Length: 524
Image (cartoon, rainbow, N blue to C red; front, side, top):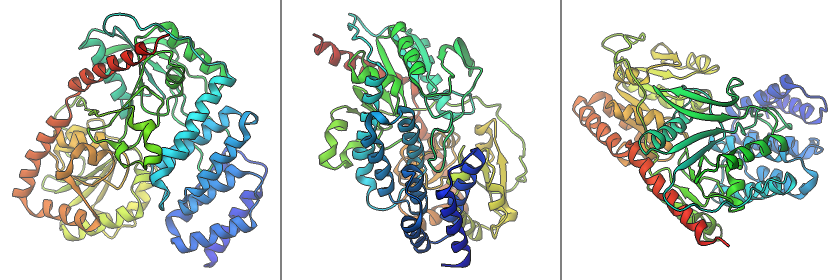
């Protein structure tokens, strides 16, 4: 090991042995792990992990194995944490299980896992842990709502239950609001958004890195929410603690609203899943990302028409396959003023654009090296990064082509920005679906690897298989104006195909009727 890695290892051992932590110390430990993961090669990280396993304190299983996962990406360490919490059974506070679950979920979403365990971890270990956690919460906190009779006639009242609802800059919030408004305004239903705020809102243990989700304190109680020129009623619960009092209040509020259908907006939605687990009311889950969604809903929709259960090992497939239904998430375009002027590109510049709300995490050293190679081969071109960031500007300054990289921060009118750009570059990431969709709508060709939300939205025409193909596609779109014009036409056609949100809601309600029929058939 180098002297730097030796020093980092000694510091990690000190953190693992420490018994006094505050928020600042937790963040310093998380930042150290992130720096090692980013700057140290894999063999050195594996050697460091061996040292920590040999010499580190084992008094805190969650802290030790979450750190080891950060160094290695080895899901063995998350398995150890899950088994430790499950073996604790009733001696473990449900809040600790819930917090650890979401910390893991975020790392999985960010693509931190490596190795061969990924194929079965989510569908086996992670799903079974979530299922056990919901059952434990329901039993220990007496959260088993009474079974409601399925009323005759069509769906009239819908509760859209979400783990997080923030503001119109947050794509999932806009999507949740849009689904609810369309059911209300286009289909004449009585609809309420139930904002549970059940993502972790405070640190519960020393899981590294920590997770504290945004929570809007002003969104408390029942009120009419206006957004994008429309209005829908919202019931919001802002208590930060994940506790019996909060969950009981939420479940009683949903039950008191007496919905014909509960729509779980996004997976891992405990408030919705206690109704599904007890067959109290029909529950349907809309995933907000591609791939396998963890949910106990009676019907689990796909993010697109692809059957994501087909790739699950046969041993674990049945619980997902019997509930899965094909679907398309769809998109509603945000408003635009039409022209944002020149954001510093220059009138004649060719601009590659990268967009996201997590660019500090998603723009990796590998992606920045790829961007540098693209700019090497595209004389005069710029690359711009749109989205709130903290660390990214410093990393852009280290590029060979730093003078042709622009950090724009948050952009209010993303569609106007796309009209000033020529190609949308999608990093290797799980998310990016909204950014890709709006780029397609404005005729901006997308370049993406063949997995994740952006690939799901953009389709095979705009997806590539590997790094070399990504580089070649980006360069060809720069060099060949005719090819770019054809790609622009294809982009608009693709959005027309996948962006019809009204049709998506119509299909959602049809699946909702199926879920109601399933419960009616088992009544009594």
